[in-house]
Image: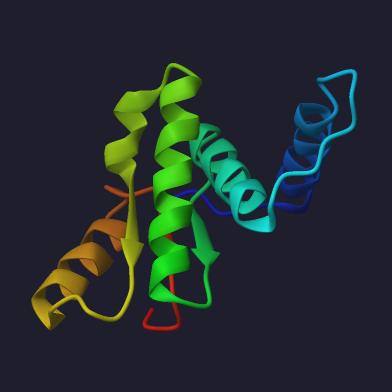
Length: 115
C-alpha cells in the first residue's frame, strides 16, 4: 500500500487549493462537505486515507458526500473502494472492513474513534 510522502502531501495540498479556487466567486463549503470532497480527491489520486469523524452520523455523511463527489467526477466505480467504520457494526463487519483496508482493497474509510 502507498504511504504519503512530504512531497506527495504538498502536491495534494496545492491541488486542493486549486480545486477550491476554480470558480470566479470565493466559496466556502461546510466543513463536512469539504472533508468529504478532500477525502474523495485523495482516494482518486491513490492515497490511502482515513477521514476521522466525531460521530456515526458524520462518518456516514462524509461517506455519502464522497460517493457523490466520485460519481460527479466520473469515477463512481471508486465508490466501492471507500467505506465507513463506526460503532454499530458487528465485530465481524468491523474485522471485514479492517481486513479490506489492510489488504489494499479499500483506499479509505470515514471512521469514528471505533477504529
